[in-house]
Image (cartoon, rainbow, N blue to C red; front, side, top):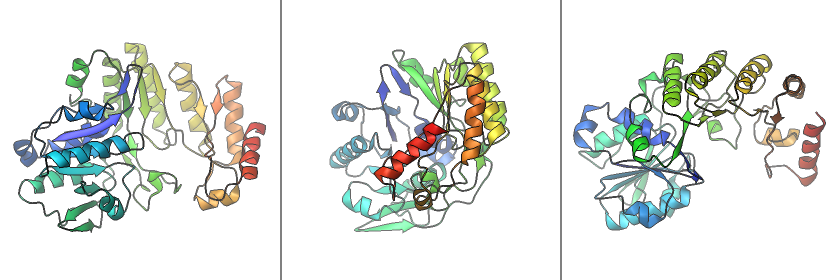
Length: 364
């Protein structure tokens, strides 16, 4: 099994491949997968296609995590693999795989399978079934090439609020060899303490149907163990995968765990989060704690647009402007910088409405 997750490298800084690690960690818990497959070293950073292909030898399964920064490279590699190894099962998942992938698979005939949403359970079931058959009927969240047709398996896996059933690739040791084999790289890591988002923003994958409307959580103990692992392994930069960091009361404990790790190990040096909306007091406490320990350079309070028509079009319940101004005032009085995000070209946005929105933000 080859897991392909091509992240960009800035200078000598590279992200550890969290998606690959999560798929591997869960799959290897299943006896049939452990007995039937060998997992190759992760292909985790962008490179010339010829260099990546040189690392792939007799693949049985090639899985790709597809995002905008890696989409063209991943498609190129998958096409080459299928040309040279026609029996290899090519599997695609990730935010840049369409939720309804029939047309996408028709346009890319070298793709055998697409996974929708969370991948751990579906990918593991796929690997087990692949040991005996290429008929993937009945596996939820999966679309597959069934001869000359594309079959879409509807339905979802049962909702499970406790995410600790998914083993940690960090504390499970799956990245230890990768780190030791690449001393020239300064590794960054993604910290995921929950999945889901209550908002329906149409520009975001969380808002796709009902796929992520309910929260799932890793335990505080699990999250703190991963933070400690990042400190011990000198992870300079950690990025939060949580959709609304600071929204939950427990996030102050996570911020404190990050501060404690930095005091104990000197790492992580920086932590970047996408903060929640409409939770004035908690966000201020979390943001201030991170800033006071040099973990974050400031706090982002995202707007995306200030136009009521645009906000209705994108189904975004924006942070209330009085809450926004209150947070800005609190942070400013504490010497903590704030910034915002505005998206150019949202449906219904005009030049005039966008400029007005920027002016509203500056005036606040």
